[in-house]
Length: 245
Ligand SMILES: Nc1ncnc2c1ncn2[C@@H]1O[C@H](COP(=O)(O)OP(=O)(O)OP(=O)(O)O)[C@@H](O)[C@H]1O
Image (cartoon, rainbow, N blue to C red; front, side, top):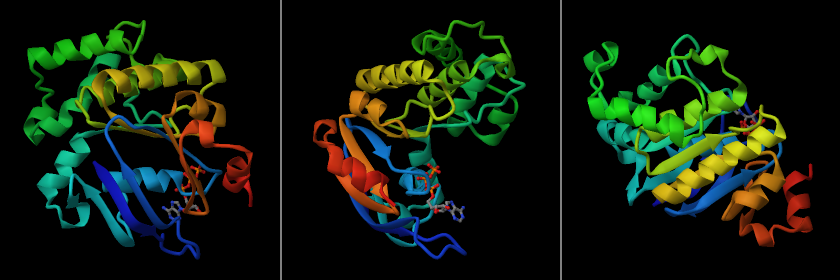
């Protein structure tokens, strides 16, 4: 579904590449956890997948089409197909739970429709249903700024899912949550992944969460892939290769 072919990313002013000659293939159904210490290139890897971060060398290919050769319309389509969540949630604090979820439909609207918040009855019903699906027990009219971190991440998941994505990306989505909440968020992501047959790729610092939920672990160290395999095969030497200096 998505492949990275010899992808390198070098940021301006940085002497070492953030990703170095990475080749990976991702298929629908994979629930991938990406491990690596701080600065290993995890966020960069997530962001090149939907074209948010341009590559310096190599290609990211979606369903046989290289992103570099896509026009703006095609890039918009792959962004729409990609639901994404972040460590800092990236919600609009002054808006309600319901309004934040509906912003996930903006990729399907023209500017005027987005500006005036024109949503169909079906979209409005989906937003309300998703509040239940992500097990968020708060009023739809509650402002997001009053929610806890775990509740905010549930809103963000609902906002990603209302896009009807085929790919779900998470850039350290549980890094600022306590361990119990982090595990509950993973359970919700896994349930949605299984029900919708998504390709899910999540960066995570906690190896035990990766072992518990992933179908595949990819580990990076200094921009290079040092492990790619099943959680059962991720053993002590792989752990050392991932977290060594
Ligand atoms: N916008 C940028 N400009 C310059 N260098 C950057 C930029 N973004 C990331 N880097 C550098 O690229 C490398 C990889 O960063 P990246 O954020 O992908 O790693 P990470 O594994 O996600 O780290 P963390 O766990 O701390 O978020 C790091 O050395 C980082 O300092």
